Structures are given as C-alpha cells and as structure tokens.
Image 1: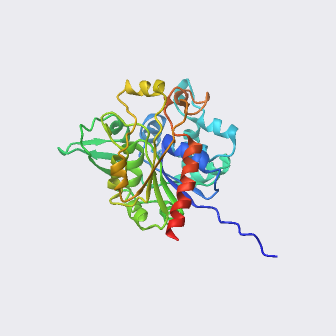
Image 2: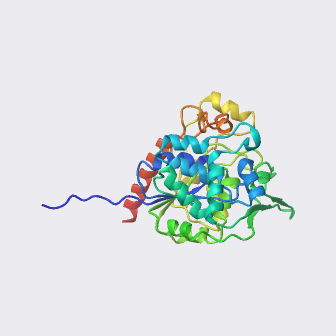
Image 3: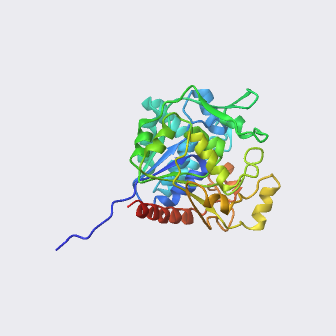
Amino acid sequence: MKEPFIPAERKITVIGGGTGSFTLLSSLKDYTSQIAALVNMADDGGSTGVLRDELGALPPGDVRQCLVALSESPKVRDLFNYRFEEGSLKGHAFGNLFLTALEKMTGDFADGVELASEVLGVRGAVAPITLSNVKLVMTKNDGSEVRGEFEITDTNFQGERPHFRLDPTAEPNPVALRAIETADMVVIAPGNLYGSLAPALIVPGIGEALRKTKAAKVYVCNLMTKPGQTDNFSVNDFATEIERLAGGEFLDAVLYNTKKPADTLVNKYSDEGEKTVRYDSDALRNAHYLAIGTNLVSGSAWQNGSASDPIAASRTFIRHDSVAVANALIRLYDYIDEKKR
C-alpha cells in the first residue's frame, strides 16, 4: 500500500523585533515548528538600555518578546514578562534580567538565548540578527547625527529619509544568514520602521541574503503612521523604505490592511498625530511586488502583555489580528509557491 504524501513543514523566518514580531509569531507557530525569529539588536531604551549601560550586556528586550511569543508554557511566559514595580529593580522585566544573567554566565549571548529557549519551551528558534554590540546612528541631510534607537524614535525627520548605520559596523550572525538562505518564506514584520526594522535590515549581509534567497519574501505593512517620521506614508511608501534600508529590491509581496479600525480607536491615535496607513491601488498595481489587501486589523484594542507587566499592560494599541495575518501569509505563500512551479 502506497504511503500517503505528507508535505514538509514550511520554514518561516521572521525579521523584526518588539510588538510586530510578537504578533506574527504568536499565530505563525501554530502552522509550523520550523520558525525562526531574527531580532534587531539596537534597542537601548528602558530596562534594556539600563542593562546595556550598567552591565555591557547585549539588548535582551526584543529577544524576550520573541521568546515569549514562541513559548508553549503560559506560566513561564508570564514570569518572563513580569516587571518589578519597586526597589532597585523597578522597571526591569524578569526576562531581561534572566537573559542578561545567562549571557554573563555563558559568556555568549547566543548561548544564553538558546538556554532561555529551553526554559520557555520555545516552538522554533530565536536568534539575534547580529552579535555585535552596536548603536543605531541616523545621519540627517545637513550632516548632523542622532545616536541611539531611543533618541531616534523621538526625532522629527522633517520630511527627510535619512541615512542609517550601525556603530561599530555589525557582523551578521551566521545563524541569521542561514535562516534567511534556507527559508521557504521570509516575513518582514510590521513595527517601528526606523527603530525596529532599520537596525535589522542595515546589518551588512542581510540585504544581500534577502536578494539571493529563493524564499518567498513578504512585508506585512504597518497599520498606523508615526508622526514626524512616516507622516502621510502609504503602503507603497513603507515598502519602498523597507527595500531602501535593505539596499535594493527584494520583496515578492506586500500584505496590507484594508479595514478601517473602529473610530474610537482611530481617534485615540489622531490626538497624537498618528493616522491609518492609506493605500494607492494604482501604485500598488504597478509595483514590482504582488500587493494583497485584506482585513488584518483586530476588532478591539490590545493590551500588550498581562497584569504581570504593568508598563506593557498600560499601552493600548490598534493592532494586527495575529490569526488573520498568519492565515493570509500561509495562503499567500501557497499562491506564490504555485506560481513558481
């Protein structure tokens, strides 16, 4: 009797960090165990910034979020997100301290992440996109510089599209390069364009790997603009910047939202100058990538985290519906795969 055909699991690599990667990974892990989260390493704010400054540690914050997203253990997830509310540890997430301790114990941040993955029961793998201890540097048109992801996040670009670099020059993590090269699909997560995505895409070798890999390369576009940086950006503007940061065209597809969030949520954002990302159907139709629009927005506000993380729990976002995005990505991959045959 002939054995039934069982398709191999898709190898999916997600690039980004923070909330955007957390959202995607939370549901993509239900489709495959062959998932790799590649995390930017330029975060220098909050608990992460203190640990970098005081202990010389590599930034654990975004790595922690990706580990938590892929964890199969709810109680340990809550533990890693627990944030101290008083004393000398006030503001620190337990997971950040744990990852820093592992780095100091093993002498290698990547080894520490691997050990943390075992503790959390992670489905898939999390890897720093570089193991270099770097700062994000932005150079404006007048030659002036802004140093540090935290400072850049609050900088008004005044309509410029500045140049970004990492100082010192970063070495790509070989594990990250392999994850891109061997993937069936590479997903650029939504998130802070210049704070979360730029520090990953500008690592030397990453853009080249994205252009060379045979994987289907998809960008999941942001839902909202950021005042002073991406004002009036449309979907194709975001995609253009993603490719500029990576050093050239590489996208096969862009997935974007067509559903307007509830007015009550939009109004909360508009007070801060944030707007929903618009899309130009004609421009997208003429783009070199396939543009797919569908309903990707969650119907309610999202508390990022739980009561164990009071800082995260106080932030309310318009967010992607993780299940809807994961479903759309898998359908999109199947479509692209079928076209390539």
